[in-house]
Structures are given as structure tokens and as C-alpha cells.
Length: 339
Image (tube, rainbow, N blue to C red; front, top):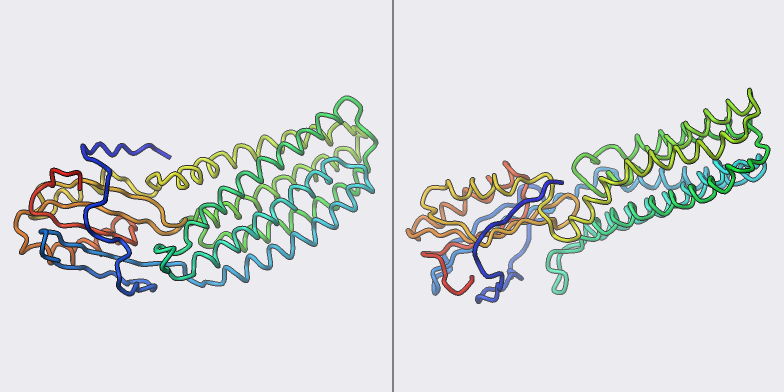
């Protein structure tokens, strides 16, 4: 994720006399943008665009199926891992159990994110999806540590491993994890939380493929040391795929500008609007893994143009930059008290 420099010379104290619990109904469907006009009194106009687009597209059913498949496979893999004396299977069973917990976090976050805003959580609970993505990344790192620890301990004196059993169980794992990844792929491109679950399943399929190869080689060569070595190679693969997820989820947790939004382009777009002489206090952050919010102060000396500007800007921000929740304040001149 690139760093976005908000180089605006202003004070970030937003206590300037307007309440961001907006006191109006929020349209929770797609296309619920609306603009506000001049509120008078202090020369300020506020425009709000809200679109909480967490569509019920069958994600609950898909995650439920993926959780069920993985729970069954964890039991099968754990039992046969002990029977075949394979650290790769045992470690993969633990890894899959961590993935089930991650999927449950994602499932819970989707439910919470769909709850409407209230008096205490005025933006709703969409941020829980960011926390779930971060939790998933941490679970993956912990699973990698457990696999690496056990594998390193077995390299020096590898026990005898039943390669045929390992290969058969791993082949079943490729099918189940591949099916789970397919179920979770839809919507993962624009949702960090779903992408984290999707990466979990792809990582599991990669683990199963590596275990399958090692099982076949052990069957033909008797090289039991391949079992822990392959486990370590799989750890490297998982770490590489997890790094981007961990980075993005940490950034969103810290209210960084989402990687899907170019803050410089947004600033330029607002500045180029007719009648706007200055833009300051521009803030862009994630309300959830799918929803982006923006607040900004626009200096518009001709206040008669404020309503028209707000009506045109809010849908434009959504269309051009996928910003669902825009709050714009119109000012006659730039405030000198940090507003």
C-alpha cells in the first residue's frame, strides 16, 4: 500500500460546532446518495452521501459450507496424521483449524457490518470486518510458527512416514480447499475480509499440494526427511501471501487511506470543481473492508453555488473513487481557527 501524504496546513481539532451524528435517516441501499444545502448561520453547508453496500449475495451460505468442509477435513487430517506419523499432515490440520477460526471471524464480521448505525456506533459496525481481516493474518502467522517449529525439530531425526497415506489425505485436501477457495472467491477483489478468507483457502490448497508431492516421493524413495522439509517450504509460501494481507489490515486499522483510493487524485478533483478556491481538512478512511468515507472542507466564496456543488459532488465521488460516505462542508472563506 502506498503512503498518501495529506500535506494540509491545518489544525485537526474538529470541534467547530457541528455534530457528525447527522440526525437523519441513512439510506442503506445502493444509490442512497444525497446532498445537503446551506445550513446558514455560520456560512457552512454540509453534504452527505451514504451507501452501505454490503449486499447479501449468498456469502453467508458460501462461508458456512467452507467452514463445514474444513471442520470435517481437520478431523480426518488429524487422525491420519497421527496414524501415518506425518508432521506435515498434523501441522496442516492445525493450520486448517486456524483457518476455520478465521472463517468464523469473517462470518461474524459480515453479520456485524450489516447492522444499521445506532446512537453509540454512528457508523455501524463495519470496522469489525477490518479487525477480522487482521485476526486472520495473525492466525496465519501463528500457524506458520507452529509448523516451522515442529518441522525443524524433525529434520535431524525424521521418523518413518507412511507416504501413501499422506498422499491420499493431501489429495482430498486439495479438492476440499480448492472448493472452499472457489466458494469464497466472489467479492474478494474489493473486500479485504473476504480476500483474507480466500487467501486462507488458497494457502491450504498449496499446503495440500506440497504434502501430496512429499507423500508420493516418500512412497517411492523412503526419504522421510522430505516431510519436514516440505513443511518448511510451505511456511515460506504462506508467509509471502500473508504479508500483503497483514500490511493492508494494519493500515486500515490505523485509518490510512485505502489502497483503492488515490488521495492526491481526490484532492485534485475537488480543487478543480467550479467555484472551489481551496480544499482543506481532507480525510479519507475505511468504514469497513468494502466502504470508504471522506470528509473535506471546501472554500466556495459564492455560497449560492453550494447546493448545486454538493448535489453533483457526492455521486461523482462514489462513481469515480468508490467513496460511499462523503461529508462535505462549504465555507465562504478558509477558517482561521482550525476548522
